Amino acid sequence: MLQTVLQIVLVIMSISLFVCFIRAIIGPTMSDRVVALDTFGINLIGFVGILMIIQETTAYAEIILVISILAFVGSIALAKFLERGVVFDRDNN
Image 1 (cartoon, rainbow, N blue to C red):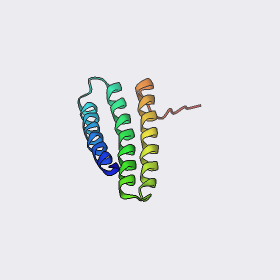
Image 2: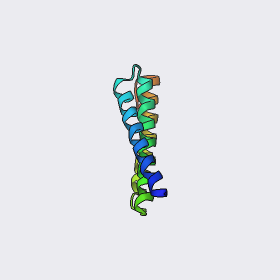
Image 3: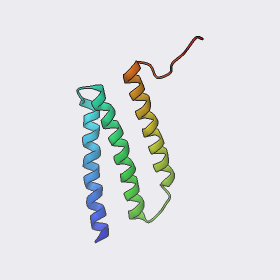
Image 4: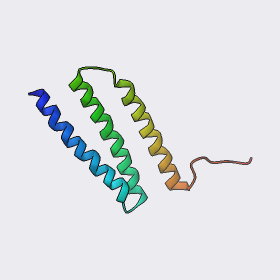
């Protein structure tokens, strides 16, 4: 029973990943694209976590950590870019 539920959840999450990808491509504003990419990262973390449950392994734990760190840093960098127009401030003091 649990395996069936997990398979259904994988299908639903696949659809969610596809919708987030489409929103990132055709989003009308840059903010929509940033939110879509952040949601894509969160969904991808859940997708890999469910794969770990199905396969009964912890082999992908490092992949989840890397994806979460990259999603966080990417979101912060894009938010800073949208706010100021630059990612790295260079002060000539």
